[in-house]
Amino acid sequence: MRIGQPLLFSSVVFVAFGLARGAGIGWGLIVAAPLLVAGVNLVARSDSHERVCAIEVGRHRWLRLLTMGGYSKNMFLATGVAEVALATVIGFWIAGR
Image (tube, rainbow, N blue to C red; front, side, top):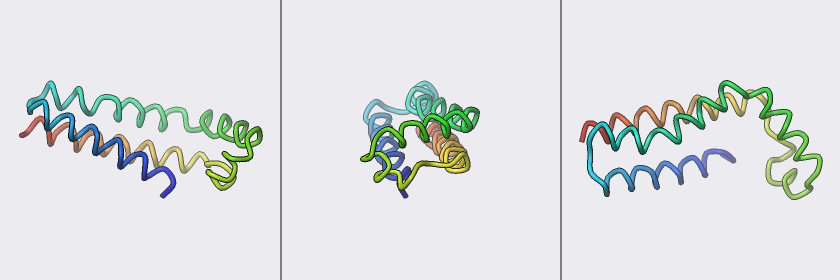
């Protein structure tokens, strides 16, 4: 769950912000938009993310240890799909409150 932890943390922060500010479609979109954009970016550009990750992992030993050698295209794709799904659920949940 290397990528899941930051995703979970950011989701909790976004949901807390949305709940503190109130409900409605506007807040649902505001809270979910950053996650949705990030998820679409990861899905659409998973090839280039994989190449950049490989370059950076080659440059930094600490990053190689953190990522266990780097992320694959499939990992970026799966993370993007999870982010899009999570953003959709959060947006509709806040909008429907």
